[in-house]
Image 1 (cartoon, rainbow, N blue to C red):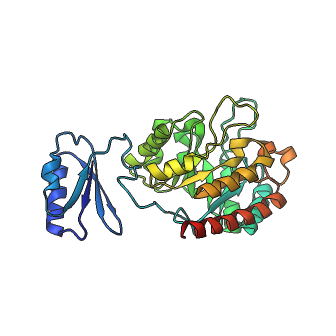
Image 2: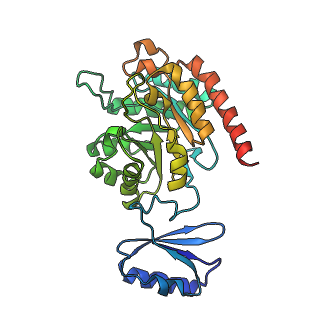
Image 3: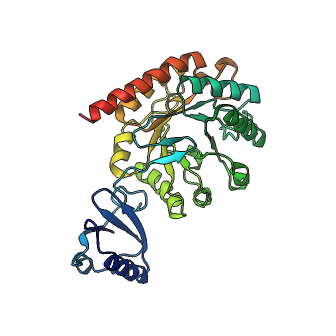
Length: 338
């Protein structure tokens, strides 16, 4: 249920309403916008008298929310969420470009790539230290050592780092990570989602390979219900009958999420396609569709990469692409403002 308040409501009446609702066992999330303040009510609201609440002088309207996700629901929070990360932000009209290797392979490698992508316009460094792989014989990442290499790259470039957390037991190692990534395979690892919900840092949730929009948003709800409202969604392709590409990039996720939620949405064209030559057209399409950012894999030697070389761009290929994407984003912003 949401309670839409009139502009500049009387403070005493508002405090009285909030106290009464809390006595009914309802949790209240307040969203203050330019025109209205909205109280999002979470809990058993079935016994609340809508007509009684609507009759109050400070109340503009009362509506029941049918969707199971509440905190992530745009009805609860009409304004877009903007998430500050280091010296940049995600959302709010900016185009965040997260770039870097799929897997951290050495300190020299990740520092060199970080410097290159920053020079091209990237605002965050992506890189995997812990890697969930389909085969137990494939490279699993450098673990804690890889995280230290990422921190060195951040110190050298100033780029905030985003990297994947696979298990609750790894959380102490992620204390100094800027954005925790929850991978597609862990999208419905509810214990892990609740654990990162207690962290004071942004969490990016990649869409599961067969997840519906509602299931994806319910994963975000787990994090937010645990206290962490800094959640980012990442579309990385879903599994369909098509086998030519690694996955099928669902670009409709961008406008749909814009409609359903206030959370920022990122697109990963590298994992979505699995082919380096498809990254540019899909990245451009994502920007045109209104994404808040992109996660692109960049490797200095894709042919000898320990993980996902076929979908990685060389720095000299990423450079002109990043510049095109930033120009395209500026054009789309102008069109949106006409």
